[in-house]
Image (cartoon, rainbow, N blue to C red):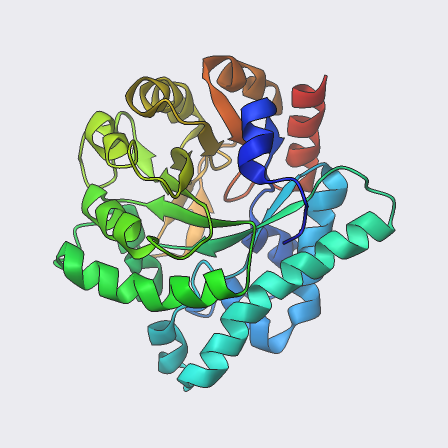
Length: 305
């Protein structure tokens, strides 16, 4: 693991800064992510670019880097002709690249604890058709558990500090993920994609968060890939329902058009908002899509005073 201090202990003691959107950082460096594998394509093609993106966030003030495995699945790799053995290598590499970035950050003089979170996106991320923002795939909990478990086993074997079960649009998929992480020996956070006070699939957040309340593996629960305006209410609900540390990392405020594969709308994310989220109970705070190193630096300044 990257730090001798556990992330769970750090959350109990105070607030931890997450990184921002990996894809937008890679795109800003000139990399084409139009492929269905998105940033996971660079695991095979340009791994050094991923290290540099993680390093940019550590240097901006992030304590946690989320790996490039969000859209990396056995099924997604198979569509590109990548076999199972190579897929295992690439999933493992995603964690190793995060560790390498942390090593370089420490060599560059960063002395604070640094952690690596292994990303596991929802089933809809593999479909690459926008269904990760809708949920309701027509699959049962057992089927979703069978989809998620093999990838989580590989990521856990790479020994990240935490598994990021993120952008989950549906409470049924959350239930499957909570079953899939049992016994892996690595803590996890569970983070929903939401619209207002409901999951993207339409379930009340009280019910969705309650699923994680008794899960021993879960060290934080919250929301990501949502509008900044949805964060405060979600934090308050998560604190009330679970009593766990809360993780939040919203988008810039712009909207993703899945058909056009483009962002539109205005930026509404303001780093100085994060102190209010902390006061509401958030303990693991960063940004998701379209939130870059400059904004993460602002988050770090706000949270560290």
